[in-house]
Image (cartoon, helix red, strand yellow):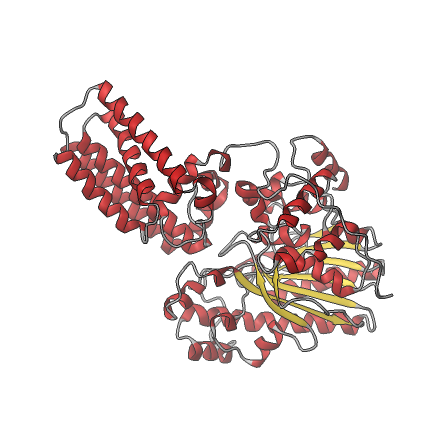
Length: 561
């Protein structure tokens, strides 16, 4: 009876920690199974319940921290990411959160240790232990199926509650974490969609397509906050086409947004492989924005604020046909790498990118595809990198709108971004008067400081707006065609929207993707469209996506490098 009461008390604590529990039977049975696992080596119910409760609260706490910083809960597949750079990144970028997390974990470990020393009770025999384990496992699996199985729990990824039950369900969902040599893609239909006919050019212009990924930039008006004229013009340029952009990530993982822009596919389609796409995806996406434009006579260029050895960028971009690749540690003087890496200033980055692009165009005037990746507004925003006396008007404007220093720091940095971007665009237009250029700009994800906005405005932390940033298309030297383009786009459709606006010819794959734009709406991965799934099957069958483990992908990447 004492053991049962202890288990019920511990289960009650866990249900409170779960926040808004739904599949209560699964939560209870999963906790019972965890208790049975500890019962197997230790033998007495008291310690087994304590250890199960400590582990459950540790899982729930770690998942809550992950959700705060990424908008997604902790899954079993994420444990591998801890050794792929996640923990060092957290310690380096969010020291306060990391230290608090480690201190809490140490406190729970101490409780478990003391309990292990002083809570010894009646020891059960081995037959009883195995019976409890088998019974609890059967109950957990039955509750998992009754709750809806993998489809039900996968849909709960972004909810700001049910942290423990989601993690345990992700373990039961073996397909979500079992390692593979190829790539997994979750939304591939059974039969292929017939591709649309290629679309002929609608303009004689061959504009440069200059894509700028603005690190951690979102539109404050998304949350009802005002912006000043400079930032307003930056986010929604006059004569351009702009609006809200849905992305797959929150707080970090910029390369997943890059991937979606470049390939026209949602990074989330690849499930647990989504984090590793720049490594596992090398050479597996022969149809991408750079390769399509290269087929039209474009030269391709990458300019990024990260170093060459960052996350396999060099190999991945080579694998999708980007010929000329510039990294922060390859820019020539007067670029100062050591000084740049203190702040990742957009002023310095755009100056270096401008120099590289001018040198490239002067050597060969062919039209360009450019991918430029900034890093200025990355968190943490608790750190003030804009010195006192600079950007004070922008900071004061932000503080009047929302009296939070992290938001003020965000807006001060954004003010520099807006100014340096305008200077970059004006310099290119002046250097090459009459040369057609289409600028495609967007935010890769929101920074974690938007949690302060949510708290101040009483917005739930699982509000879907956390996955929305901004996009802006603007042209110089030609008349773009923005007709029919929505002001609500998914990142997987932004490259296609840019090609449509440019008037360039579209191949069969891009023409088909354009035809699906309205049906898929503003959230590509979440779209239930059967045509989308059939389109993905067509891409796989035509070799535009290579999922199977083979040597072809690596050979192609090596040849392009």
